[in-house]
Image 1 (cartoon, rainbow, N blue to C red):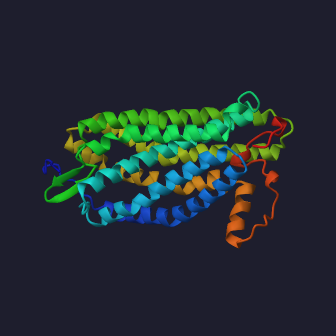
Image 2: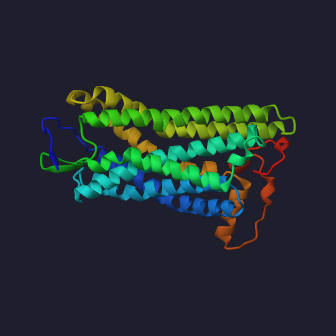
Image 3: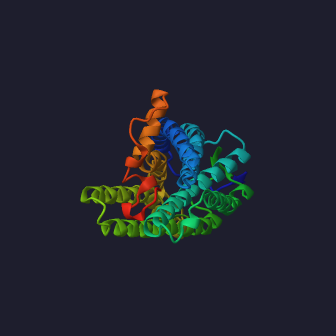
Length: 325
């Protein structure tokens, strides 16, 4: 435990309303939808579809992130006074960061997988295998665990005027400034750049494909735009504010007070992605919806043919590619 300067006092009352309302809503929706998404992705894996590996890891990452949120709800309702041990505080902060950026990593993997499937369906088919997807997923998890391991080595419980603050203190510690900037560049800007580039190339390939109907082209365009916009809305505001904090805030209490509220709102916003992912990457497809209906009706009979989906995330592929992805 570390004693911090009590002269930098910030009113945390907003936390008692913002995070319980936001996180409880996310928990109620995210847990069942991501559990269903896990099941649907398992069905894709059984069909030897490598995309199912990335979808499974994405859903698993979102689910783990969601399962951590009740502790932050309890922390917020306790007036930001951490009641558990310091080790639990460090572990929860570690898992929060790991799963947040793992989610971005697997979203990037999905965009690259779809890019190869649509733009280079034959040239790089050897990279689109179950074994490769498992290896890539392992590397994503390994990178995230190693890059966030420093959190476990630091003292993350701070004594502020009798209250115990977990991880996020104001003003920001100098080491967290460097830590955050690295994560912003590699964990957010790089995935965003790759996703925008991949989906732009995907739509360009679909747009020039004469075998794809104009109506389907428009639906594909809307889906790709929705995916990008969802990612930007969920993560970019938080990382913009975090970048500003990392540059300006260390040692500056007045600035910390000014940016406190925007930071808290954007932090809460990141959790919305756990709800968006299952709908954008799993339930948007005919096959995914058919699998969900199978679960809901406890019946193995699927009411719609799986090969019907021409605009689903697991099959954003022009018909001229001559392969079922």
